[in-house]
Length: 280
Ligand code: 13P
Image (cartoon, rainbow, N blue to C red):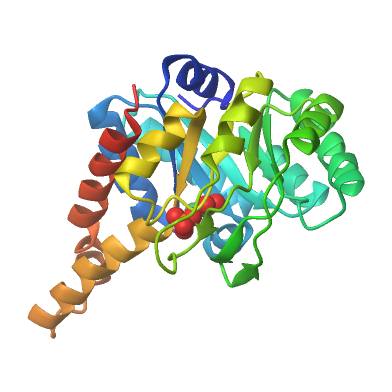
């Protein structure tokens, strides 16, 4: 069933596990994630960046595709369809109108007051329609969808202020994680993560899940992280499978076979993440 992220993330916070957010890129990707998570009987958040929505044809295409897959594949787990890093009120509105059940408004590149004003506008529109809202504070570095940003960490007082002013449902405080591959070991500020979690009632989100070792994932969950975003890791797993397949089947041109040669790796990675995240 398509749901917003409210209950799934509050349950995760209460019971100390994380719900996986996997970014989707196309029909096959979405199908593999839904099939595997349904088999595992765990909730899932499907993240869609603006770039991925554009690639697939638009927010309506994605929303209708996900709804149709849930129906035709008889998916019975809770599925949240979520905008990843929505950059404006207009983007979030379009996705909500198309049927998305959750949005991230990422106004973190603006000043705190502007971030609050934009986030507030999104919350007002979203909550009236039963849609949950995630916001970002500080700035998560690295590169995603060709958008590169520098890293600066969130501060506890600013997190408290933003949450109080906006009434968001979950918060992604930048605490050293980056999108894409890490240069060396990730350096997460667990102390501030715990302080923010203790001070707030809403669940916390960890972006840049690719490349964070299992021991640090465990620590992040102990410090209150309830949702972990994974994008690059699935892409690399898929690409490894496809590379191998093409090497061994150089004359196969059926796109269904080529694309599906990454399926096994995607599904294995999903299993690994669900174990690491202790998803219930
Ligand atoms: P990775 O690509 O590093 O897994 O990050 C994903 C993410 O945070 C999406 O918002």
